[in-house]
Each structure stands twice: as structure tokens, then as C-alpha cells.
Image 1 (cartoon, rainbow, N blue to C red):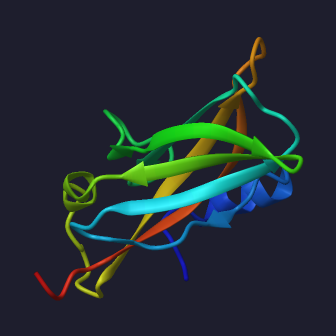
Image 2 (spheres, rainbow, N blue to C red; image 1 turned 180 degrees about the vertical axis):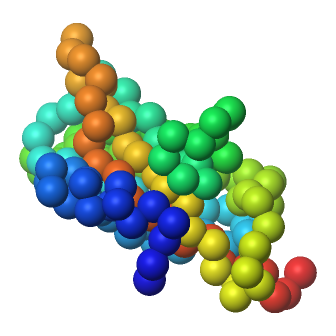
Length: 131
């Protein structure tokens, strides 16, 4: 599936920072997914935001709520979510095909460390049929 930011996705691949395709969100419905990392990231902070495209001006379209990490069996799992109100607020489907794609990056700040790009990718947003 082509995006308006394919060059950015190729650059992520070249640097082994993605691209990742997130599970699709549905407009006007709650969204939830998890990210698991090997190791103990207790005290780390994860920041996840979506934009129309990388470097788009202004505020991000959405900032995910991030909880965690939960650490078990050698994995640190972060829970990412958005409320139905947040997914409803994404820009409308510009080409009327029922799917819009947004650039997402995931930043990680280990406890006492520096913030770095963990990976980036695409969040598909599906149109809504039923109320």
C-alpha cells in the first residue's frame, strides 16, 4: 500500500528502524495495541504520536496514551491506546477509499537515558460503516 511518505519509510528500513504497520484503527472507536521489547525497561517512557506525514506542521493528529511497561518473562510490554473521541478526530478520508494512512513514530527514553527513535511506521485508519 503506497503512502505519501514512502521515502521516509524506506529511510526507516535502511536504518533498521521500521517500517512497522500498526494494527488498523477504526474511526470513532477505541484503539488498543501493545509493544513488547526484550529486556527490563522499568522506568522507561514511551511516546507515540501520529501525523498526516513526517514533519507535518503543528500539533500531532493524535498522541497515544502509553501505559507500562509491564515486565515479565524477560519482556517489557507497553500498552498503547486511543479513545473513540481521538480516533474520530483524525482528518477525513480524502480519496473516499475507506482507508487513510498516518505516519507514526515511537520514541523511547530509558530510565536515566536519552530519548531515541525506537521505530516508525504506518497507522491505517479504517472508515466506519455502522454507528
